[in-house]
Image (cartoon, rainbow, N blue to C red):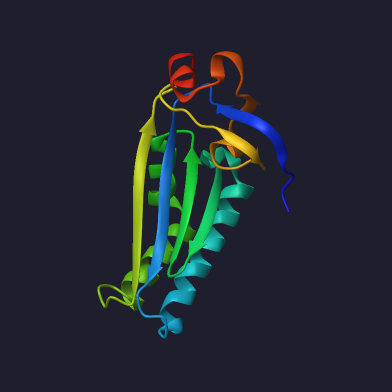
Amino acid sequence: MSKIMPGRFTAQMDESFVVFIIGMRINRLLAIHKWVPVANAMGGMLQELYQNPEIGFLGDSGSINMRTITQIQYWRSYEHLEQYARNSHKHLTAWRKFNQAIGSDGSVGIFHETYLVEAGKYENVYVNMPAFGLGKVGTLVPATGKRESARQRLTNA
């Protein structure tokens, strides 16, 4: 279990970065043979990303909610993310297998959203939390003084 950090903190990033939300939705629970390989493929890609920091992947936080598995990933740049998507054997293999096994049969849904975040154009706060989200990849500092409120964090970044 992650160590709880008592108090209020905010994460800072010195450079622009990318937030990439990716996930899958199990549309047919009994089609286990369809959705388990999709879930397993993400595990292999994450292992590859963490083992190769030069790829530009900074870290992730994930969650499971009923039929949906979601990951919030942080990347150095869109170019790094795109380069990985276009050149990773693990990603290309998983994408090909998904299209062959599932295609548009409706058993499993996949999604992603990409956000380009300019330096200083974000804010966050973590209260009595372990390092989470941007706090796992940025520098955590106390959310006090000029970092007390959301507006102050946005205007003083």
